[in-house]
Image (cartoon, rainbow, N blue to C red):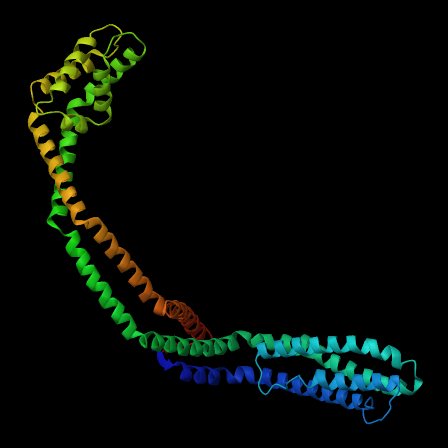
Length: 404
């Protein structure tokens, strides 16, 4: 049976579960932190012997000594004693303290080289050096013994840290949700404007003329396929005749040549542009049939026969009805498009589309950064919560469902 807890409860429950496992490590770490704090105080006490700031006219060495004193307090007063520990806190404390010591030693190397010339400072320098050495020794113990041992509970502490991170992520996500909601009136106003424009756009795009154009287009596609089937072999024959003409093997007038080229490229266009009955095409086909008997035209007998059959079908007006229909459809579509131009329909549609796009951009911009951040936080919450639940079960043998 799984437990269900909100994040605050889960954090308290898990920390209680692992307290017996981690207490000895934390106590040992806190003890070492206190020892280091004591060593820092010893160092500051040793540095007090270098303070000559109360003298009215200190000599050069005394000024150097006071500088050492001031630097000691400035450097080590910044180190904060930990009130509670985690591995991350210990790591940060050790790193910061090391950095402070290194900077402090660089400062000492400059000023102590001068003070060592005056034997009166010999005892003071030894005391300060001894205090600094003791501090470094205890920091070494922290890094190479305490923290190495403490690393055994890192995985347990990481669960607690991640629950704290989840609390922060959920708080941020909820804040962002409220921020997004606070812009509802602005978003609604733009949404209403978008919907009104979309309605107007839909009315324009649903004009009966558009539907008729679409029907005409589909019907013309079917007619084009029918014509293409009729002229497939004729196109091949035309290509061979044109090549023979180009190489001067046969004679062909320019009109017939141009009509053959157009038939190869756009059969529907050629047929539809002809006057009713397509007399020009018929004349060209008769010429094609005549010249194809020339030996210069090399084409397989069965293909040539199919081309002749198709030519005869076209000459016998078998595509006359679809030519009439194609001419009507093309003329009707042109008339509709002319009417649309007169209405400036394309301009009105483009204007509405641009306005809708701009309004959507304005609407999205209001909460875009907030929504993006919320999506990122929610993704992190989902991933991290699953990881936390899995590790809680691993470390406690309890199934815990986190409630947000």
